[in-house]
Image (cartoon, rainbow, N blue to C red; front, side, top):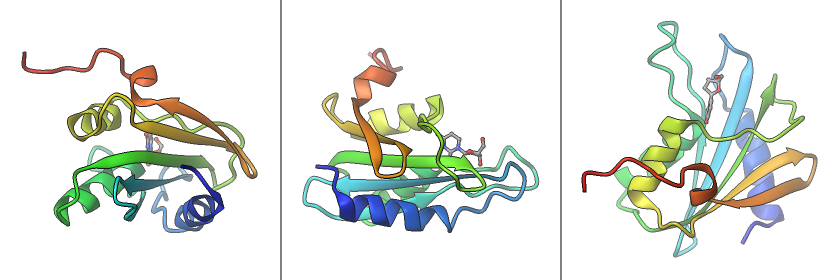
Length: 132
Ligand code: THU
């Protein structure tokens, strides 16, 4: 599932983060069930509220290109791009992921150099909003 290739893409994507307001760089790598890879970074805005998270950048890129079957996402982040601990996905991103991903969808959080922990989407959002 998670491998060195995904780790390297993730670390590289951290450099694309546009985060002049928080100086907190976040990167995400989303992988489809067919193995296609979509990257995302956080993109901040002077209005603050128009900021978009790395995870949603990646998922919106994928959906807009016709992919909606995902197996995993890897996330890394830290102040000025230095990873010191896990960067957990925010509630809005979890709700967006829930829209498209099964409960066995994996979330890999980088917690240091070449170090990560595996989670499931349901670990973070066990009871998501739905219309039923
Ligand atoms: N951020 C993400 O990119 N993903 C998350 O799940 C949480 C927060 C970004 C948004 C903002 O640019 C910065 O982290 C600090 O909140």
